[in-house]
Amino acid sequence: MDYFIRELTPPEPASARDGEAWRLLERFRDIVNSGYAATYGEGRLLETSRRILADWTMPGPVTSRLFLAFPSGDGRDAGEHPVAAAKLMVSPRDSPTHAYPHVVVDAPARRRGIGTFVAARLEELARADGRTSLQAWVEHPTPGGERVAAPTGHGSVSAADPAARFLWKTGWELGQIERISELRLPVSAESLLAHMEAAAARAGTDYRVLTWEGESSPAHLDDLARLNGDMSVDAPAGELEVDEEHWDAERVAQLERRALASGATFLNAAVLHVPSGRLVAQSMLQLDLDDTTRPAQQDNTLVTSTHRGRRLGMLVKAANLVQLAERYPECTGVFTWNAEENAHMLRVNEALGLVPLAPEGGWQKRLS
Image (cartoon, rainbow, N blue to C red):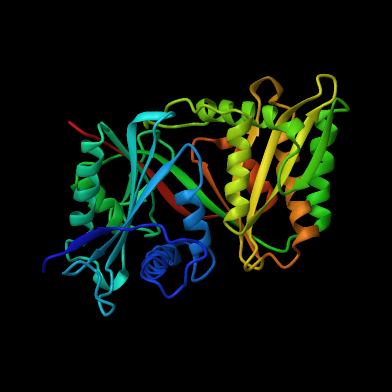
C-alpha cells in the first residue's frame, strides 16, 4: 500500500473546533496517547490538544513540525484515518547539528512498513536542514527475555522490544537508558515530613526551603536559569552527544508561560542559600488542570555543584511532594525519568517510594 505524509498547520485557537486543522491536531493527539498507554497505562499520561498547540506555536528554544501519515491520497478526505503521527524538533541555538524526530504508529497499523516510511521522510527533512545527527527518546515497555545493555553499563532493553528492533535495523545506536519511575499517591504525610526533616537537618541552618505554584518571582529567574544551564552539562548523558544549553531569565519565563498556556500548572520547590541569597536547588512538578487526578510529571531536579552532598535533592523533592498533596490531594501519582547511572537520584526516588515502570532509551543516529 502507498502512504502519504502530510505536514500539519496550527489551527487558530479561536477557530471552530470542527475545522480541518483542529480535526487533524486531535487525530495527532489520539495516536500519541495510544502510544503512551502501552508504557504508562490507559489514560494516565496524556497529551492534550492545548498543550500540543502551545508547545508548537509559542516562542521558545525548540521549534517543531508535526505530521500525519495516511494510507493513501492526501488525507483531506474526512473518511481517511491517519495511521501514524510524527514530530520533528530542532533547537537551533542549543544544538545546531541535531534534530529530534518522534514517530508513533497507530497500534492497528503496525508491522506494515509505516514507521520505516515516516522515519525516512523525517530523516530527509533533517538532512535538508543541514542536520548531521538525530536523537530520540523512546519507551521500551517489553519485559523479560534477552536483554541488551546500554553502553554505559547501566540499564538495558529487551532484545524483543519492537521499537528497539526497529531502531537497530535502521542504523540507530543506543546511547543511554533512563529509568521511568512512578510514585502512586497518596503516600504517608508523616513519611514525607520525616524525609524533609532529616534532609533539612543534614543541610543545616544556611539553607531554607521555598515553595510556590505558577510563575516564579522575577527575583528568582536568574538563579533558575543558572541551575538549568548547569543541568544541561552536569546531567549524565551516556554516549549521547549533548550540547550546553543557553539559559537566561527570559528562557525560564518562556518555559513557564508555555506551561500555563498549555493548561498545566506547575509546583516549584527550591532551596535558598541564606548567606549568599541565591537559589541553589530546585525541583518542579507539572500537573494538567483539565484533570488533576492524573499523575503529575516530574521535571528537572537540580542542585548546583558547589552545594551537593547536603541532601538538598531529597529536600526539594520531598518538599514538592508535600506541596502537591496539600494543593492537589486528588492527584494519583507522579512519573519521573532518570539516567540509570544517576545512582544518587535513583536512591532518593526509591526512598520516597517510587518504583521502576519501564526503561526509556536515548538513541542516536549520525547522518553521513
